[in-house]
Amino acid sequence: MKKEMAYDIQGNSYPVADYNDDYDGEKFGFWIFLLTEMMMFGVLFLLFAINFYRHSELFGISSGNLNVWLGGVNTVILLLSTYTMGLASLMMRQGKVRVSAYLVGTTVVMAILFLSIKAFEWSVDIHHGIYPGSSILDAKDKGEILFFGLYFVMTGLHGLHVIVGIALMSWVLLLIRSGGVRPEHTIVMKNVTLYWDFVHLIWIILFPIFYMIGV
Image (cartoon, rainbow, N blue to C red; front, side, top):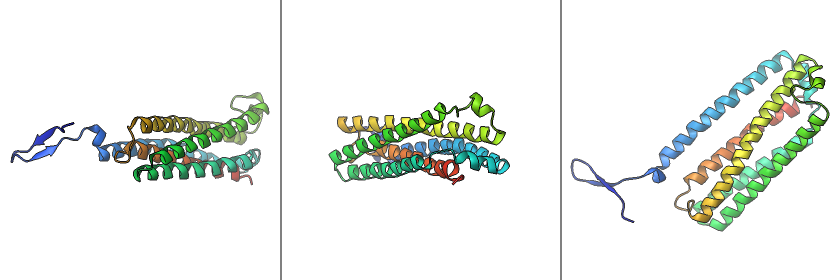
């Protein structure tokens, strides 16, 4: 397929790059998106810090009610999934397409496992009447209500990002199969890898502030 050419006033020709070849533009646009995500979570972390300062003792007591072992297992799962997704991107650049696809699929499985463990945790909390708006939680002190309110909002929002990550990685698998992602064109895969790194980093902050302040 012949490339479209553009010419300057001296008559020199240059190939026209469409959006599929605009590596810098796609990378810059994705960083802007991640910046907005950081701002959103940053506000929530600031809100947590303010309320933790006001209700330190009650936040510590509330944290002690969370299952630090399940939170720790989920932390390890996300760490491993970040490694497999990063390795998948590296393998694609090296031309190892099948290995790359296998690693992306492995990352998806670990992401689903993370969500399953988190759903089990939530189900236990809800079974004990600990969820926003419940009569049991509303009867507790203000600090405990604030802690669990922030816990459900922030881990729930993070879980939503995990679901989006699963959808994006599944899309990458489809693109690999169709040739949309290949060794010479990996910008989509790099951006999805970067997104998954962000999801992992958010959890690295969520885990200690919710699960470990009561240990």
